[in-house]
Amino acid sequence: MTSIPASSHTVSVHGQHAAQHEVAPGEIAVGVVIGRASEYFDFFVYGIASALVFPKVFFPFAEPLQATLYSFAIFALAFISRPLGTALFMRIQARWSRGTKMTAALFLLGTATAGIAFLPGYARLGAAAIVLLALFRLAQGVAMGGSWDGLPSLLALNAPKERRGWYAMLGQLGAPVGFIVAAGLFAFLLASLSTEDFYAWGWRYPFFAAFAINVVALFARLRLVVTHEYEQEIRQHELEPVPLGELFREKGRHVVIGAFAPLASYALFHIVTIFPISWILLFSGQPITSVLLVQVVGGFLAIGGVLASGLIADRFGRVPTLGALALAIAMFSGFAPTLLGGGQVAQSAFLLVGFVLLGLSYGQSSGAVTRNFGSRYRYTGAALTSDFAWLIGAAFAPLVALGLCAHFGLAYMGAYLLSGALSTLLALLVHRWLKQRESGAAA
Image (tube, rainbow, N blue to C red):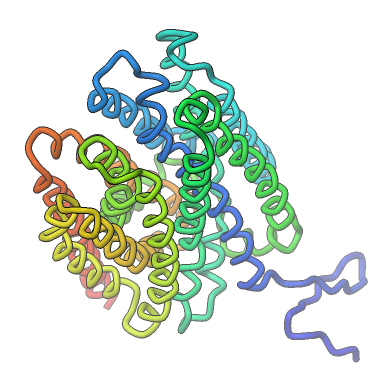
């Protein structure tokens, strides 16, 4: 009898045996990292532009602070439309296929991003430019919701039990990688171009780059997602869309817990990336290019934090790690306002410490409680909990933080971070109580 390698299995096809390669966790991890890095690059290109560019290009009629608040309001639209995109594209997947859904979603994302790159400013189109910017931003949110491929869930289910924390953090690496490339590109353009050229046409290049990267990432992900082996793994783990009514009826409490559990990390997410650019630009004399370069260094520290979170979570558990980092963010919220309100050295310290905490906490923020969904509801449940977590914890963070801090002082930024940390701790306590109750009922 011919021996079969450990990485293969056999199926009978008309009486013949055909060896089929199983999807290994490493292969899934590559798809996760590529997909998330491309999405986050697109995400941060818009985020940085919303603080740095759009107030001048699309809201030149308003005072700088008010223009930035208008820009951040449009920034939040994508998070509002993202759950709608998830629901819409889940239906597309159920009607056609996962590959069709992803192709349509990423085509929409690329179209919206390219549309922003070509969009004339207020000086040429007037109010129509603002309306089109808002529509493109809404389309980005719908596309981001629709681009969910289930790879993180499949990776978690295929990871060795003792290394789930390590494999869980791999997809989270996309955030700091995407930010480093986006911030580095904007810093290069600002340093290389005159102010007039940058605001006239230079800011558009990152959007062109985001469009090109999304095309490459689409083919890289489809190459894995549409394979027979991947589809077989998906069917085996029941990672398919379910009706939303059924999901909320059966697992609604876990959707709520999953949405609030990562809020400490998600609140910090924009407080150290997008918000400081706007604050320092409006109220500090520090050159914005220097801020971006410090943030690039912070991005590398965040990568180290994400990697370390995997080791820590495998040693102590994912939920305890998430809770401990929420406490750390709560402590950071006490002195963060003083640092950001200080000079250049203090502001740099705020950014670097914030990025370290972001990496450590964000590395385990995704999927720490999604096992509660079980196999049938995990695919749809994981997508929607992520959407709602972004909506509650991050969508309005730059808008709320800038508005409150500009009118009442930086202490309100600390209060915002503290509220996120307390939300995480409360959600984890409820999660623990539900597990104990369910274990008692089962016994």
